[in-house]
Image (cartoon, rainbow over all chains, first blue to last red; front, side, top):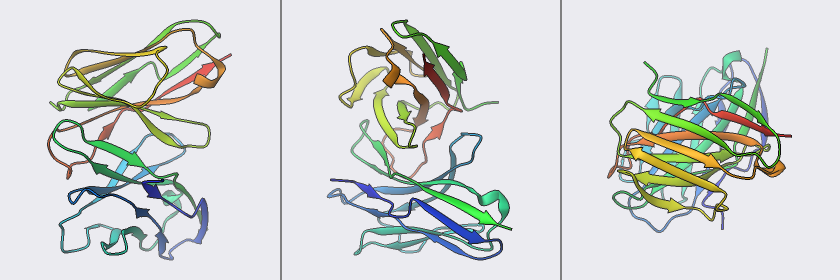
Length: 116
Length: 114
């Protein structure tokens, strides 16, 4: 079974609009971390935002926020006021495991294209 | 200063050859990883090492042999390269014992087997 599911292979959004990228996860580990990474066409992996399984508040980093709904096992990324430079692949990831054997598992990604 | 650096960035080689990719991190992390990103952009973990010890081996063919001479380095050697090995290989590192810190990635090595 997929541990991380991203159901949107591609999205097109008008510049300056907000966009939500969906992510659901599956784990039986009570302690886990959820991450979003951006991969532009240049190929590097850029960390965007983190949410811990015990965090009460949704994480925010500048224009990025994470809509964390633990009971639904979802961790959607919200990008406000999108910019042309936001066009990229976006990956949701989950870290689980115990001391020394933590593993970061990725979803299949969403390709976001911002339209001028 | 680059936190996680991989060399080379591009590697083009013929089927059957043996090649190595090197990775070094200067973050003081105990855990290092190799990920493979295929043509559909799917990122799959191959190996993880903690303090030079192999922790995770995700059913990777034994033509792939990681080696960690110290906790700052994790190299990947591939024997008898096949066309299906063409992919982007990412090295990453993270601190051990915490799930709240992101993994830091190298810039990737694009391997093309012809």
